[in-house]
Length: 442
Image (cartoon, rainbow, N blue to C red; front, side, top):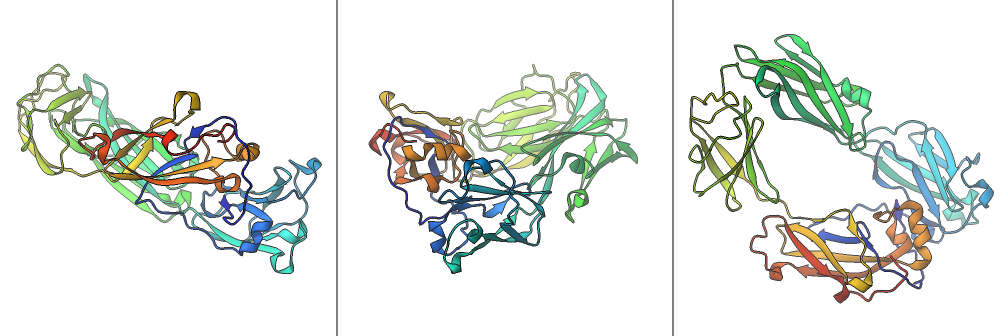
Protein backbone atom coordinates (compact mmCIF):
# COMPACT_ATOMS: atom_id res chain seq x y z
CA UNK A 1 0.00 0.00 0.00
CA UNK A 2 1.25 3.46 -0.91
CA UNK A 3 0.45 6.14 1.67
CA UNK A 4 -0.05 9.67 0.50
CA UNK A 5 2.85 11.53 2.18
CA UNK A 6 1.15 14.89 2.53
CA UNK A 7 -1.59 13.64 4.83
CA UNK A 8 -1.22 15.28 8.25
CA UNK A 9 -2.15 13.36 11.40
CA UNK A 10 -2.52 14.91 14.85
CA UNK A 11 -0.30 13.64 17.67
CA UNK A 12 -2.21 11.60 20.23
CA UNK A 13 -1.57 10.69 23.85
CA UNK A 14 0.42 7.58 24.87
CA UNK A 15 0.56 4.29 27.30
CA UNK A 16 3.13 1.55 26.70
CA UNK A 17 6.23 1.61 24.54
CA UNK A 18 6.60 -1.21 22.02
CA UNK A 19 9.30 -1.75 19.42
CA UNK A 20 8.66 -4.50 16.89
CA UNK A 21 10.26 -5.60 13.65
CA UNK A 22 8.80 -3.43 10.91
CA UNK A 23 8.00 -0.57 13.30
CA UNK A 24 11.55 0.14 14.37
CA UNK A 25 13.80 0.08 11.31
CA UNK A 26 17.57 -0.37 11.10
CA UNK A 27 18.82 -0.19 7.52
CA UNK A 28 22.10 0.10 5.67
CA UNK A 29 22.91 3.58 4.47
CA UNK A 30 23.39 1.95 1.06
CA UNK A 31 19.68 0.96 0.96
CA UNK A 32 17.43 2.18 -1.81
CA UNK A 33 14.01 3.74 -1.45
CA UNK A 34 11.02 2.09 -3.11
CA UNK A 35 9.66 3.86 -6.16
CA UNK A 36 6.63 6.07 -5.49
CA UNK A 37 3.93 6.60 -8.10
CA UNK A 38 3.18 10.31 -8.45
CA UNK A 39 -0.42 11.39 -7.99
CA UNK A 40 -2.04 14.77 -7.63
CA UNK A 41 -1.37 15.90 -4.01
CA UNK A 42 -4.94 17.19 -3.80
CA UNK A 43 -6.12 13.56 -3.53
CA UNK A 44 -4.52 13.47 -0.06
CA UNK A 45 -7.62 15.08 1.38
CA UNK A 46 -9.75 12.12 0.26
CA UNK A 47 -7.45 9.07 -0.09
CA UNK A 48 -5.17 7.85 2.68
CA UNK A 49 -3.35 4.99 0.90
CA UNK A 50 -3.62 2.63 -2.06
CA UNK A 51 -2.05 -0.49 -3.57
CA UNK A 52 0.80 0.50 -5.88
CA UNK A 53 4.37 -0.29 -6.91
CA UNK A 54 5.30 -3.90 -7.75
CA UNK A 55 2.85 -6.46 -6.36
CA UNK A 56 2.37 -10.21 -6.37
CA UNK A 57 0.11 -11.79 -8.95
CA UNK A 58 -2.27 -12.79 -6.15
CA UNK A 59 -2.65 -9.31 -4.69
CA UNK A 60 -5.96 -7.57 -4.17
CA UNK A 61 -6.20 -3.87 -5.06
CA UNK A 62 -7.08 -1.79 -2.01
CA UNK A 63 -7.85 1.89 -1.52
CA UNK A 64 -8.31 3.47 1.92
CA UNK A 65 -10.23 6.71 2.08
CA UNK A 66 -9.57 9.50 4.54
CA UNK A 67 -13.20 9.58 5.71
CA UNK A 68 -16.12 7.21 6.09
CA UNK A 69 -17.94 6.59 2.81
CA UNK A 70 -20.60 4.01 3.82
CA UNK A 71 -22.57 3.00 6.88
CA UNK A 72 -21.63 -0.07 8.91
CA UNK A 73 -24.31 -2.29 7.35
CA UNK A 74 -22.35 -2.39 4.06
CA UNK A 75 -19.08 -3.57 5.66
CA UNK A 76 -18.11 -7.00 4.37
CA UNK A 77 -20.55 -6.76 1.50
CA UNK A 78 -19.88 -6.71 -2.23
CA UNK A 79 -20.88 -3.44 -3.86
CA UNK A 80 -22.72 -3.27 -7.17
CA UNK A 81 -21.34 0.22 -7.86
CA UNK A 82 -18.59 0.11 -10.46
CA UNK A 83 -15.65 1.83 -8.76
CA UNK A 84 -12.56 0.23 -10.36
CA UNK A 85 -11.57 0.19 -14.01
CA UNK A 86 -8.36 -1.51 -15.21
CA UNK A 87 -6.32 -1.44 -18.36
CA UNK A 88 -5.83 -4.21 -19.40
CA UNK A 89 -9.21 -5.26 -18.04
CA UNK A 90 -9.50 -7.39 -14.90
CA UNK A 91 -12.61 -9.23 -13.76
CA UNK A 92 -13.41 -9.59 -10.08
CA UNK A 93 -15.55 -8.23 -7.26
CA UNK A 94 -15.37 -5.12 -5.07
CA UNK A 95 -15.89 -5.49 -1.32
CA UNK A 96 -15.99 -3.01 1.58
CA UNK A 97 -13.56 -4.13 4.32
CA UNK A 98 -14.60 -1.31 6.64
CA UNK A 99 -16.32 2.06 6.29
CA UNK A 100 -13.21 3.56 4.65
CA UNK A 101 -11.49 0.61 2.96
CA UNK A 102 -12.58 -0.71 -0.43
CA UNK A 103 -10.88 -3.73 -2.03
CA UNK A 104 -11.03 -5.17 -5.52
CA UNK A 105 -10.45 -8.93 -5.52
CA UNK A 106 -9.47 -10.25 -8.97
CA UNK A 107 -11.26 -13.42 -10.05
CA UNK A 108 -7.93 -14.96 -11.09
CA UNK A 109 -4.27 -14.16 -10.69
CA UNK A 110 -2.93 -11.07 -12.42
CA UNK A 111 -0.62 -11.48 -15.42
CA UNK A 112 3.05 -11.85 -14.56
CA UNK A 113 5.08 -8.74 -15.39
CA UNK A 114 2.02 -6.81 -16.59
CA UNK A 115 1.71 -3.07 -15.94
CA UNK A 116 -1.89 -2.19 -14.98
CA UNK A 117 -3.48 1.24 -15.10
CA UNK A 118 -6.17 1.87 -12.48
CA UNK A 119 -9.02 4.38 -12.54
CA UNK A 120 -10.97 4.66 -9.28
CA UNK A 121 -14.33 6.50 -9.45
CA UNK A 122 -13.84 8.58 -6.31
CA UNK A 123 -16.74 10.89 -7.21
CA UNK A 124 -19.20 7.99 -6.82
CA UNK A 125 -18.35 7.86 -3.12
CA UNK A 126 -17.42 11.37 -2.03
CA UNK A 127 -18.22 14.94 -3.01
CA UNK A 128 -14.98 16.01 -4.72
CA UNK A 129 -13.90 18.74 -7.18
CA UNK A 130 -14.33 17.88 -10.85
CA UNK A 131 -10.59 17.42 -11.43
CA UNK A 132 -10.52 14.75 -8.70
CA UNK A 133 -13.48 12.69 -9.86
CA UNK A 134 -11.24 9.80 -11.03
CA UNK A 135 -8.17 8.71 -9.08
CA UNK A 136 -5.72 7.28 -11.63
CA UNK A 137 -2.40 5.54 -11.09
CA UNK A 138 -0.58 2.34 -12.11
CA UNK A 139 1.09 -0.71 -10.62
CA UNK A 140 3.09 -3.65 -11.97
CA UNK A 141 2.94 -7.38 -11.26
CA UNK A 142 6.22 -9.10 -10.36
CA UNK A 143 7.76 -10.58 -13.54
CA UNK A 144 7.90 -14.36 -13.10
CA UNK A 145 11.30 -16.07 -13.25
CA UNK A 146 12.97 -19.17 -11.83
CA UNK A 147 16.36 -20.55 -10.85
CA UNK A 148 17.31 -24.16 -10.08
CA UNK A 149 20.25 -25.37 -7.96
CA UNK A 150 21.45 -28.74 -6.64
CA UNK A 151 22.09 -29.12 -2.93
CA UNK A 152 23.44 -32.65 -2.58
CA UNK A 153 23.65 -36.14 -4.06
CA UNK A 154 23.64 -38.89 -1.43
CA UNK A 155 22.43 -42.45 -0.75
CA UNK A 156 19.28 -43.26 1.20
CA UNK A 157 21.32 -45.49 3.54
CA UNK A 158 24.96 -44.68 4.35
CA UNK A 159 26.22 -48.23 3.78
CA UNK A 160 24.12 -48.89 0.67
CA UNK A 161 25.55 -46.84 -2.18
CA UNK A 162 23.67 -48.27 -5.17
CA UNK A 163 20.42 -46.33 -4.57
CA UNK A 164 20.82 -42.58 -4.33
CA UNK A 165 18.82 -39.35 -4.46
CA UNK A 166 19.43 -35.82 -5.72
CA UNK A 167 18.26 -32.92 -3.54
CA UNK A 168 17.77 -29.43 -4.93
CA UNK A 169 15.62 -26.33 -4.94
CA UNK A 170 13.76 -24.37 -7.61
CA UNK A 171 13.04 -20.75 -6.71
CA UNK A 172 10.39 -18.67 -8.46
CA UNK A 173 10.26 -14.88 -8.35
CA UNK A 174 6.53 -14.88 -7.53
CA UNK A 175 3.91 -17.37 -6.44
CA UNK A 176 3.65 -20.37 -8.75
CA UNK A 177 0.94 -23.02 -8.54
CA UNK A 178 2.28 -26.27 -7.07
CA UNK A 179 0.86 -28.49 -9.78
CA UNK A 180 2.25 -26.24 -12.53
CA UNK A 181 5.72 -26.17 -10.92
CA UNK A 182 5.75 -29.96 -10.77
CA UNK A 183 5.15 -30.08 -14.53
CA UNK A 184 8.29 -28.01 -15.14
CA UNK A 185 10.97 -30.63 -14.45
CA UNK A 186 11.85 -33.83 -16.24
CA UNK A 187 14.61 -36.08 -14.86
CA UNK A 188 16.19 -39.07 -16.58
CA UNK A 189 19.24 -41.30 -16.21
CA UNK A 190 20.57 -43.19 -19.21
CA UNK A 191 17.20 -42.71 -20.93
CA UNK A 192 15.15 -43.89 -17.94
CA UNK A 193 12.69 -41.38 -16.48
CA UNK A 194 13.08 -40.72 -12.74
CA UNK A 195 10.41 -39.70 -10.24
CA UNK A 196 10.64 -36.21 -8.70
CA UNK A 197 9.01 -35.44 -5.33
CA UNK A 198 8.29 -31.85 -4.30
CA UNK A 199 7.78 -29.72 -1.20
CA UNK A 200 6.46 -26.17 -1.63
CA UNK A 201 7.06 -23.41 0.94
CA UNK A 202 7.57 -19.64 1.22
CA UNK A 203 4.10 -18.77 -0.15
CA UNK A 204 4.64 -20.72 -3.35
CA UNK A 205 8.06 -19.30 -4.22
CA UNK A 206 10.44 -21.98 -2.89
CA UNK A 207 10.05 -25.47 -4.31
CA UNK A 208 12.44 -28.11 -2.95
CA UNK A 209 12.69 -31.34 -4.93
CA UNK A 210 14.15 -34.82 -4.60
CA UNK A 211 14.99 -36.92 -7.65
CA UNK A 212 14.33 -40.46 -6.46
CA UNK A 213 15.92 -43.84 -7.17
CA UNK A 214 19.08 -42.69 -8.89
CA UNK A 215 21.16 -45.77 -9.73
CA UNK A 216 24.86 -45.76 -8.90
CA UNK A 217 26.42 -48.41 -11.07
CA UNK A 218 29.76 -49.95 -11.92
CA UNK A 219 30.36 -47.18 -14.42
CA UNK A 220 29.77 -43.43 -14.12
CA UNK A 221 26.53 -41.99 -15.47
CA UNK A 222 24.67 -38.70 -15.83
CA UNK A 223 21.26 -37.62 -14.54
CA UNK A 224 19.80 -35.00 -16.85
CA UNK A 225 17.47 -32.39 -15.36
CA UNK A 226 15.45 -30.32 -17.83
CA UNK A 227 13.29 -27.44 -16.57
CA UNK A 228 10.83 -25.60 -18.83
CA UNK A 229 8.94 -22.54 -17.57
CA UNK A 230 6.09 -22.94 -20.08
CA UNK A 231 3.70 -24.34 -17.46
CA UNK A 232 4.06 -21.19 -15.32
CA UNK A 233 3.75 -18.90 -18.31
CA UNK A 234 7.35 -17.92 -19.10
CA UNK A 235 9.65 -18.70 -22.02
CA UNK A 236 12.64 -19.82 -19.97
CA UNK A 237 14.45 -23.15 -19.79
CA UNK A 238 17.34 -24.57 -17.77
CA UNK A 239 19.20 -27.85 -18.29
CA UNK A 240 21.58 -29.38 -15.80
CA UNK A 241 23.69 -32.55 -15.90
CA UNK A 242 24.35 -34.15 -12.51
CA UNK A 243 27.29 -36.61 -12.64
CA UNK A 244 26.86 -39.89 -10.74
CA UNK A 245 30.27 -41.50 -10.04
CA UNK A 246 30.89 -45.22 -10.48
CA UNK A 247 30.55 -47.42 -7.40
CA UNK A 248 34.29 -47.86 -7.00
CA UNK A 249 35.03 -44.17 -7.58
CA UNK A 250 35.32 -42.41 -4.20
CA UNK A 251 36.08 -38.75 -4.91
CA UNK A 252 35.14 -35.11 -4.38
CA UNK A 253 31.99 -34.21 -6.32
CA UNK A 254 31.37 -30.59 -5.33
CA UNK A 255 32.44 -27.78 -3.03
CA UNK A 256 31.22 -24.34 -2.01
CA UNK A 257 32.08 -21.54 0.40
CA UNK A 258 29.41 -20.53 2.90
CA UNK A 259 29.69 -17.00 4.20
CA UNK A 260 27.97 -16.46 7.51
CA UNK A 261 28.66 -16.00 11.18
CA UNK A 262 31.08 -18.95 10.84
CA UNK A 263 32.73 -18.88 7.41
CA UNK A 264 33.58 -22.35 6.11
CA UNK A 265 34.08 -24.54 3.03
CA UNK A 266 31.68 -27.42 2.36
CA UNK A 267 33.26 -30.35 0.47
CA UNK A 268 30.89 -32.99 -0.90
CA UNK A 269 32.02 -36.53 -1.70
CA UNK A 270 30.59 -39.33 -3.79
CA UNK A 271 30.23 -41.53 -0.66
CA UNK A 272 29.20 -41.00 2.96
CA UNK A 273 32.27 -40.56 5.15
CA UNK A 274 33.76 -42.24 8.19
CA UNK A 275 32.80 -39.66 10.82
CA UNK A 276 35.44 -40.85 13.32
CA UNK A 277 38.51 -40.34 11.11
CA UNK A 278 41.21 -37.79 11.90
CA UNK A 279 41.53 -35.27 9.06
CA UNK A 280 44.51 -33.33 10.39
CA UNK A 281 47.19 -33.33 7.69
CA UNK A 282 44.80 -34.62 5.04
CA UNK A 283 43.11 -31.27 4.28
CA UNK A 284 44.95 -27.95 4.10
CA UNK A 285 44.24 -24.40 2.99
CA UNK A 286 47.05 -22.30 1.52
CA UNK A 287 48.57 -19.73 3.90
CA UNK A 288 46.15 -20.73 6.64
CA UNK A 289 47.11 -22.43 9.90
CA UNK A 290 45.23 -25.10 11.83
CA UNK A 291 41.79 -25.95 10.50
CA UNK A 292 38.72 -27.34 12.25
CA UNK A 293 36.57 -30.02 10.64
CA UNK A 294 33.03 -31.33 10.88
CA UNK A 295 31.93 -34.53 9.12
CA UNK A 296 28.29 -35.33 8.36
CA UNK A 297 27.04 -37.85 5.82
CA UNK A 298 28.96 -37.15 2.60
CA UNK A 299 30.15 -33.66 3.56
CA UNK A 300 33.19 -32.23 5.30
CA UNK A 301 32.95 -28.67 6.60
CA UNK A 302 36.30 -26.93 6.85
CA UNK A 303 36.57 -23.97 9.25
CA UNK A 304 39.55 -21.58 9.02
CA UNK A 305 40.76 -20.00 12.31
CA UNK A 306 39.94 -16.46 11.07
CA UNK A 307 37.81 -15.10 8.23
CA UNK A 308 39.46 -15.30 4.83
CA UNK A 309 39.30 -12.94 1.86
CA UNK A 310 40.30 -13.68 -1.72
CA UNK A 311 41.23 -16.92 -3.50
CA UNK A 312 42.86 -19.84 -1.64
CA UNK A 313 43.96 -23.34 -2.66
CA UNK A 314 42.25 -26.14 -0.77
CA UNK A 315 44.18 -29.41 -0.97
CA UNK A 316 42.93 -32.89 -0.08
CA UNK A 317 45.49 -35.65 0.29
CA UNK A 318 44.83 -39.28 -0.60
CA UNK A 319 43.66 -41.12 2.49
CA UNK A 320 40.29 -39.53 3.31
CA UNK A 321 38.08 -42.55 4.11
CA UNK A 322 34.46 -43.33 3.23
CA UNK A 323 31.88 -45.05 5.46
CA UNK A 324 33.19 -48.49 4.40
CA UNK A 325 36.73 -47.38 5.34
CA UNK A 326 37.97 -47.29 1.74
CA UNK A 327 40.52 -44.54 1.15
CA UNK A 328 40.35 -41.90 -1.57
CA UNK A 329 43.07 -42.98 -3.99
CA UNK A 330 44.16 -39.67 -5.48
CA UNK A 331 44.95 -36.28 -4.00
CA UNK A 332 43.03 -33.31 -5.33
CA UNK A 333 43.10 -29.53 -5.05
CA UNK A 334 40.65 -26.76 -5.80
CA UNK A 335 40.59 -22.97 -5.84
CA UNK A 336 38.06 -21.55 -3.41
CA UNK A 337 37.03 -17.90 -3.39
CA UNK A 338 36.28 -16.25 -0.06
CA UNK A 339 34.14 -13.27 -0.98
CA UNK A 340 33.23 -10.53 1.39
CA UNK A 341 29.61 -10.46 2.53
CA UNK A 342 27.53 -7.59 1.22
CA UNK A 343 26.75 -4.94 3.84
CA UNK A 344 23.56 -5.92 5.64
CA UNK A 345 21.66 -5.66 8.91
CA UNK A 346 19.06 -7.90 10.54
CA UNK A 347 17.08 -8.19 13.74
CA UNK A 348 17.71 -11.04 16.17
CA UNK A 349 14.46 -12.95 16.23
CA UNK A 350 11.14 -11.50 15.06
CA UNK A 351 11.22 -8.30 17.09
CA UNK A 352 11.27 -7.01 20.64
CA UNK A 353 8.71 -5.65 23.07
CA UNK A 354 10.57 -3.22 25.30
CA UNK A 355 8.83 -2.09 28.50
CA UNK A 356 10.21 1.26 29.61
CA UNK A 357 10.61 0.02 33.20
CA UNK A 358 13.30 -2.47 32.17
CA UNK A 359 15.29 -0.29 29.82
CA UNK A 360 15.16 0.16 26.07
CA UNK A 361 18.02 -1.94 24.68
CA UNK A 362 17.38 -3.26 21.17
CA UNK A 363 19.72 -5.98 19.78
CA UNK A 364 20.53 -6.31 16.07
CA UNK A 365 23.23 -7.83 13.87
CA UNK A 366 25.30 -6.27 11.10
CA UNK A 367 28.06 -7.27 8.68
CA UNK A 368 30.56 -5.11 6.76
CA UNK A 369 29.05 -1.87 8.02
CA UNK A 370 30.73 0.90 9.98
CA UNK A 371 27.52 2.91 10.31
CA UNK A 372 23.80 2.15 10.24
CA UNK A 373 20.92 4.55 9.75
CA UNK A 374 18.23 4.32 12.42
CA UNK A 375 14.65 5.47 11.86
CA UNK A 376 11.99 5.33 14.56
CA UNK A 377 8.35 5.66 13.59
CA UNK A 378 5.74 6.29 16.29
CA UNK A 379 2.20 5.01 15.87
CA UNK A 380 -0.05 7.44 17.73
CA UNK A 381 -2.40 6.10 20.39
CA UNK A 382 -5.51 7.28 18.53
CA UNK A 383 -4.36 5.32 15.45
CA UNK A 384 -3.36 2.03 17.12
CA UNK A 385 -6.66 0.33 16.23
CA UNK A 386 -6.29 1.53 12.65
CA UNK A 387 -2.72 0.14 12.62
CA UNK A 388 -3.97 -3.30 13.72
CA UNK A 389 -6.53 -3.35 10.91
CA UNK A 390 -3.73 -4.16 8.48
CA UNK A 391 -0.88 -5.31 10.79
CA UNK A 392 0.08 -7.66 13.56
CA UNK A 393 2.55 -6.38 16.18
CA UNK A 394 5.45 -7.08 13.80
CA UNK A 395 3.75 -5.51 10.78
CA UNK A 396 5.09 -2.60 8.76
CA UNK A 397 2.31 -1.79 6.30
CA UNK A 398 0.95 1.74 5.82
CA UNK A 399 2.94 3.21 8.71
CA UNK A 400 2.92 6.74 7.35
CA UNK A 401 -0.88 6.66 7.44
CA UNK A 402 -1.02 6.11 11.21
CA UNK A 403 2.22 7.64 12.51
CA UNK A 404 5.28 9.65 11.67
CA UNK A 405 9.08 9.42 11.99
CA UNK A 406 10.26 10.81 15.32
CA UNK A 407 13.99 10.18 14.89
CA UNK A 408 16.50 9.64 12.09
CA UNK A 409 20.09 9.14 13.14
CA UNK A 410 23.33 7.58 11.89
CA UNK A 411 24.88 5.27 14.50
CA UNK A 412 28.58 4.40 14.28
CA UNK A 413 29.60 0.78 14.90
CA UNK A 414 33.35 1.47 14.90
CA UNK A 415 33.50 2.08 18.63
CA UNK A 416 31.53 -1.05 19.62
CA UNK A 417 34.68 -3.05 20.44
CA UNK A 418 34.24 -5.45 17.50
CA UNK A 419 37.52 -6.55 15.92
CA UNK A 420 36.13 -8.07 12.72
CA UNK A 421 33.30 -6.14 11.05
CA UNK A 422 33.49 -8.52 8.06
CA UNK A 423 31.39 -11.16 9.83
CA UNK A 424 27.97 -11.04 11.44
CA UNK A 425 28.29 -9.32 14.83
CA UNK A 426 25.69 -8.45 17.42
CA UNK A 427 25.20 -4.84 18.46
CA UNK A 428 22.73 -3.07 20.71
CA UNK A 429 20.96 0.27 20.56
CA UNK A 430 20.08 2.08 23.77
CA UNK A 431 16.83 3.69 22.72
CA UNK A 432 16.46 5.56 26.00
CA UNK A 433 19.19 7.90 24.73
CA UNK A 434 17.40 8.46 21.43
CA UNK A 435 13.84 9.30 22.35
CA UNK A 436 11.47 10.14 25.19
CA UNK A 437 9.18 7.19 25.91
CA UNK A 438 5.48 7.93 26.06
CA UNK A 439 2.93 5.46 27.42
CA UNK A 440 0.24 4.57 24.87
CA UNK A 441 1.94 4.63 21.47
CA UNK A 442 3.63 1.96 19.38
